[in-house]
Length: 333
Image 1: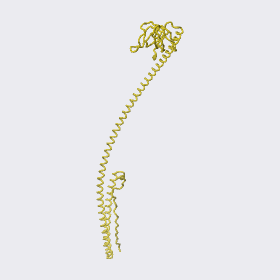
Image 2: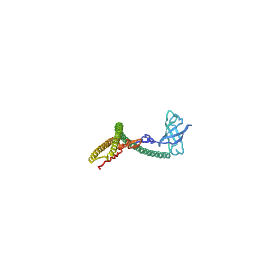
Image 3: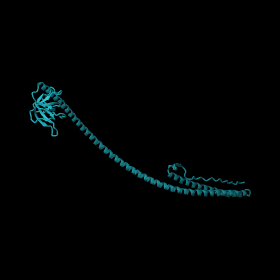
Image 4: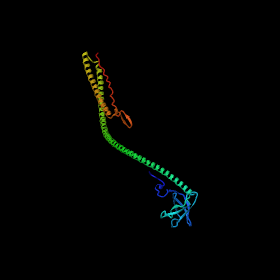
């Protein structure tokens, strides 16, 4: 077991009686000489003691010391003792250690000293037990702390490994995400380039359609002119017929004239229908071109310009005004 504190010298003591450490202070004087001083008891037994003093001692041995009783040493320390040995504490100080053997100690003093020594021994034993318990507790605590430290170290190592794996997983995910984002960005750039090309193409088609619409409008204008011309011819024909209404001589002559007039009227109507049909075909072709461009632009033909929705960015194709032809058929009289 471990021991901490005062040394247990009494267990290995080889003297006549056991000695224990003590800290009593006393006054001494060498008998029959004018040498005196104060000393501190370092250890003591029933037969003698070791003291420490700073006084200059005579060089010879077996000199007798007289000890003056005090409150702390009364009836505990014998009154006389002889010097057995002496030595310097160390080279750097004047203090000396002196071995004293008691001379003719009183029985009551020895009895009191024995009780003090036994009490000191019991105290030392208690201290030793406490030191042993404290040492055992300290060793147990150290073992527990070491086990806890090993457990924590193992836990930290596992956490470090898990964190490293997690970091590697996150790094792989980031790399994959970066690759996907890069691929999406590249695809988006390609789509954007295609969209720009498509917009350029739509612009060209719009320009071509504007040109076609201008041509179609010109054709419609020409057809309107032709229609007006035919209308004027019908009007002129009616004016020409009026003078002949009263000059038809016979029924056969009238029928022949009416047949010619009706034939001419039919030809005029066929011409007017053809003009209208051609104008309608031109309008339908222009409308189809317009619808194709609007659908190509997306959003069901709607376009956004200056943050506003525009539903009709082409000039509307106005249908030509219907031409009313007033043809009076000359009936038979």
